[in-house]
Amino acid sequence: MAWKRLWNPSLKKYMDQHIKTYLRGDSGFSSPKLYETCKHNGCSYAIRLKQNNALISLAADRDEDLYSSTKEDQVRYAVTYDEFMYQAGPWDYPKRVVFKI
Image (cartoon, rainbow, N blue to C red; front, side, top):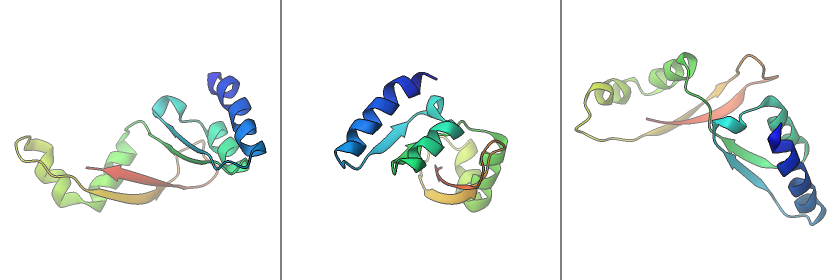
């Protein structure tokens, strides 16, 4: 994995200097191994997940009114944020997912 060649030396450097680290990445970085590397090394992270039917359903259930009113109406603009716990198939445990509608 390309992130290992880039991330592991950088993470070690910051950890050796006691610098708090935070990884932000797009969905291409979404990997259970990367999550575990971050967790093991005390690194916080925010990584975008690829949209899928399960995530859409969970988000729509949390804010059904806003989702249904803005899905078809592209003229009005409204944004809300919420969160839920979600466990994808390869994950060992559920993780906090924050979403924006």
